[in-house]
Length: 224
Image (cartoon, rainbow, N blue to C red; front, side):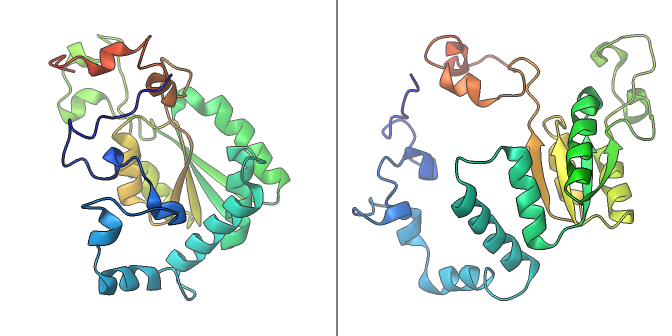
């Protein structure tokens, strides 16, 4: 059973400490120091305006809401990405792929083609640059004493930018590499698979079992 955070432990953690969630339905009172209450009306209106009109932000917002409302609990993530791409008019779909999930990426590419979309994939080891070239010690390689290419998310993004992809999909990029890819991607980015080698790419499982199997998550001073 998933444990709930204790609001008294972390005073400044933002929305994770709220047990009311009035911001969703507005069927109760906002708690003290609620972010929804703290946001000024002018700032809120400026942000809301970004979801109006025909800008890419507005198209993404409307498409996301439409896919959510139409298919909530009915479609897989694979199908939702296709529905979303269709609604924002994205035809060419970039796949930023981990080498360890190249088979999954191949299956996803076939699904996209069947649905009249145009996948173009770039694997994480593109360029084949050894990790030592950026100062990674040999002892930090997975297989020491051999060529081991670094993950190259910036080059992945640049190559997909060159192809003028209209929506990019992350498929299992490592923590941090995904951040770099999103930072350098010209096209909007969504995620199909979030890598978690230990939990079969289901990172939420660590949270669901934090009261038993993964109690170590709450151990302080582990120096990760």
